[in-house]
Image 1: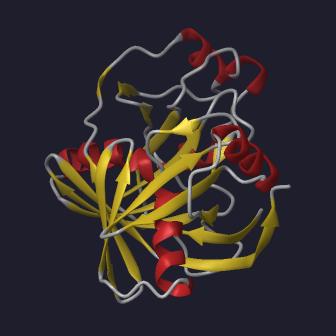
Image 2: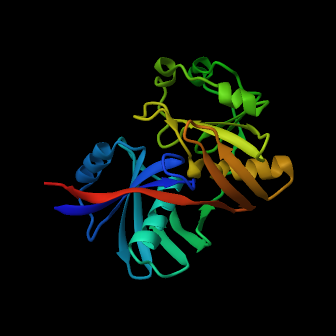
Length: 262
């Protein structure tokens, strides 16, 4: 079977920056075993598969290990693929997903994704995660992900993970996000996933479901700009809407081609 494949860098205006995701349009769903094999072969953090279904689009996200309940950068990549390569004409895309209906509005090359808010609650850090960190957080919260709050952007840049310890815990489908107030942005973050093929995710849109309400409350502002401080870095435009959040960014196509599954 021959399938189209697009690799797109999300939350950036430049190739080789932001978070790469692969996007594969389908006519019918293939067995999950095949979807996982394609994802592993793609060798990126997430591959998005979608089927157009009238006025909506059925969207699923896969890592090499699991099917995700929500993925921001692969959603943005899928929207970019539809608009730039598949002649999608509407200014709003409606996705059917595991977390319900998600909308993406497109304006001036920016993709505005409407996601559920996941307000993190005060929590205790598991000993395994604590021992894996070279710098300890000043506050710990938990929603899907552990949200670790630090004193400064410099601390976020200097955090290292002892993977042999970190991988002793399984947080599927979540991870650990470290965050602090930014120097030239409202806040910064980095994101790590234990037992994952890729330890540090370059830009993690779904983590902002918790980061946006947290920093909106902490900073007293519902409109925020954030940078994720991975090696590739990403830029995100954020809005807190109480029970929903807007996670917005740009994208660039890196490659386009064909794959054969047999």
